[in-house]
Length: 439
Ligand code: ATP
Ligand code: MG
Image (tube, protein in one colour):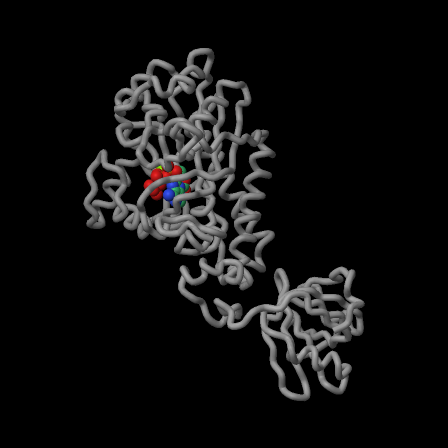
């Protein structure tokens, strides 16, 4: 193998090699997707970021040395090929490259822990154990290009609405909501916890004069769930807005969702085709269903649920059968929502909280918040928590706190709706769940 490709650069990605580039010289870099040695002719499929190019080497057209080098190549090794483009009726994309030079950059061990062709799909655990190889499949990498585009459009959208991106700590002394679902860690000589939500920090930012903030960051939930929609580390898209209420917060969320879906459809059509998902732009306004109405709806299809109770899984499933796409559930009972949620002034048993659902999946929870210090203290006590452990948070409510509202969207659950995937683990590069801590 020659060394003249030593300091060269890629001229094209596979996707950019077109039949009308006849006789043009290209330098391609990538992995050996498949090899076929027919004796007098060798076919190598070179795979890169988002395409595959056929390298066709007839023994009569290439040097003996190059032909022998090609013959020795192993699947999934990394190579550079310099060659000339030719039109070809049979090759993928109607084009092939006749090689003139080859450089082996990294040889792959065989057998592979996972097949990289699209023909088979291993069990999710086998795939996650060898995630770097699993991601070589375009149908898997496409999921993360879609997630990336979604996060990009979320940022663009919020920036266009004058939101400021913030970063709050992920290590803290106590719980956000006083829940037990926290991961304790050792912080020098003290115990600390991983953050389950930026809730208290984004509310303190409302007392700081920023008006509109957002954060896209991990949240940690020590829930023992082992379901297709729960992870223990999630990327949360969190928003908080001052001088506003839950109605405005729902409108903002609805616009953000529609914008992200539209952008994904516009910029990721190839990826959507690769995973075979027909993404629909949702119609607006999203239906808004009162909690009490929802309870009656699920009961009417035979799912028992009491008024006042949190939504059992069976109720989510029943709603998923009745509703198509996104919808809000509003007017949740105050007693089942966290202390920082504002009670409805007309009926304090109800709250200004909402959930955004997609079929049977909760995508987001949000609410108008309590901004009155004394009411907040009272609500903290009512939930059996000690206001003293919230004193730094509560101080922000004593020196001028505007009314405010906000929500949090799980980026992975949102990605499930953009890809049609049913297992949340598929939407995280390296998921953390009840059983998995590596890779
Ligand atoms: P669920 O009832 O489905 O367990 P939750 O009500 O506990 O969710 P919230 O505390 O309301 O979740 O968090 C806001 C959003 O963050 C959720 O709507 C969801 O999109 C996401 N989220 C929260 N916990 C998880 C988790 N364990 N795994 C995946 N996403 C989560
Ligand atoms: Mg929720």
